[in-house]
Image (cartoon, rainbow, N blue to C red; front, side, top):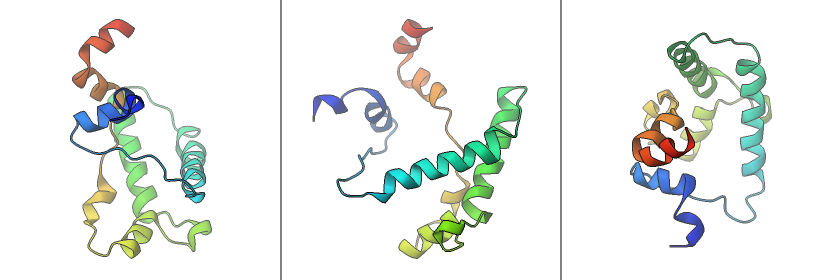
Length: 121
C-alpha cells in the first residue's frame, strides 16, 4: 500500500468497508463532470435553501439528491438523468442506488476516528 493511501479519505472509506479509487489518467471528463455537478447543486440547492437545524438540512438535502439523481434531466447529457446514464452503462443496477442518503462525513469521521476528532475539537 502506498503511503498516501494510509491516511485521509481513502483510509476512512476502506474502514467503512468500501473501496476508494483515484480518477484514472486520461479520464478527462470525470473531473469536469464532478465539478459541473457540484456547481449545479450549489446554485440549485445550497444558494437557495436555508437550514435551521441538522435534521432539517439532512431531510432537504436527501430530497434534493433524489430529485437530482432520478428526475432532473441534464441538457449536457442528452437530457438524461444520472440514473438513466448509469442504467445504460449497467442495466442490472439496483434502482435503490439513486435513493441513497447523503453521508454525514463528520459523523463518520468521529465514529471511526474518535481520537482524531478529540484532537481537532
